[in-house]
Length: 157
Image 1 (cartoon, helix red, strand yellow):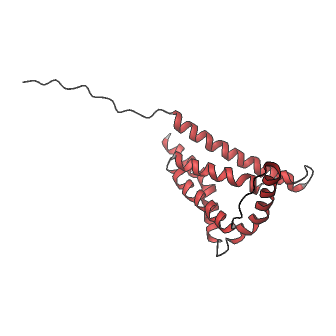
Image 2: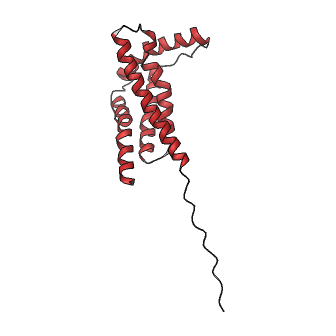
Image 3: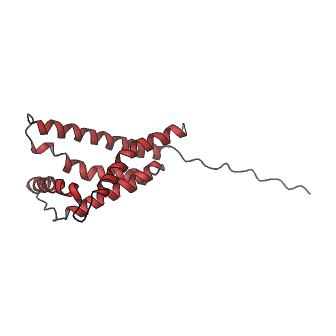
């Protein structure tokens, strides 16, 4: 049972770790292609937030957002493999921040081809988010083993 749990964590985290590795290799001095693809999506997300909530998001260099995503995915994935709830929380934070920005189906009409593709990817990431929540919930619901208290030995003289 322990091996299958470990194997499941390795397979699950491999999605995040391989993605972080790929983005790290393409990072360059400007954040790589991820930063170029992220800029228009972040601007659209910032406009949505400002128009609906009235909160102005700060101007952020995309290379720093990409570096943060790489760190969250890489460190979170490795800690998740080791069975750490903190690793799962890092991956949850990554999913919470990036999913609504990257998969902005809400900016398209429901008949558009992009809407369907983005909505499918959005729901897949929500499934990953749910699996991470399940892991954290299971990790916190299982009582930790308490060492059995040994009965004091009687002294014989």
